[in-house]
Length: 365
Image (cartoon, rainbow, N blue to C red; front, side, top):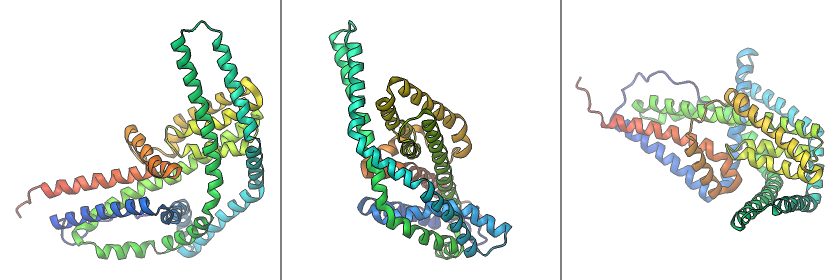
């Protein structure tokens, strides 16, 4: 949404005071967002959804403006109409089946978990006949118990997340309004913000905003597209295999795809549990193989093409961000932790560059 890197400002070149102002403003913005995120995260929810919506419709808005010659407000409204058609189609053809599946899944959850526990008991009975040392047998029992607890916890957490999503109705209603005014007044907001900047700091600010825009747009558009593709493939695979609750399990796979590294595993666990409970070991192995193929396809073909290196974080940084996000705000924090960490990386890189310029001796004219 931020325009490409601006041309160098014809006014005074970068000065120490301007770069100090830029660093201070960036730190104040980061601290302010962090404080709001810590104290009142619900306030940020509609704004976060508005940013996501704006990034989703921005390419279509630009296309309608450039190719069809529509005014920007009309282009936004046409884009909203296209999204509304998709939402209505989803509500008519998919949502009733999804709600019915959720109701059946909640109703059958005790029986499903009991079947999973029986399967785990059969595993224990199977290796219990092996001549294993006592310490090794205890270690295996502990490992199986941890797997059982993880599976049960993943199912409960996933269902709680789906049910809790219905509490976002107010934010979902407010987000299109916020996104509309953001898209309509983007240029005026940019110009007004530019007038507040010292002349020498404008180029640095526009460059930083362009890098932040690249991170956010790459993650929002790419990750949501990838999640939709993976969720669709998982749903189709489960339908072909005859696994119950295919729509719900495919949605969980899509949500899990939003979380790097660990998300696909937790997205697959409910499907594996349902497969084991309803079809036994054969269906469990077939479901596991289907998810393995989907993840191989996602990792080797889809993710590099759709998402690419938008966030550009080291795996250790991603894992640390995921842990902090989970500690602060649970599932929502986990999903948002990676793009936030990517933005912090950009701000940190520009801050280091600004401080480096401060330490450079001034050239004599």
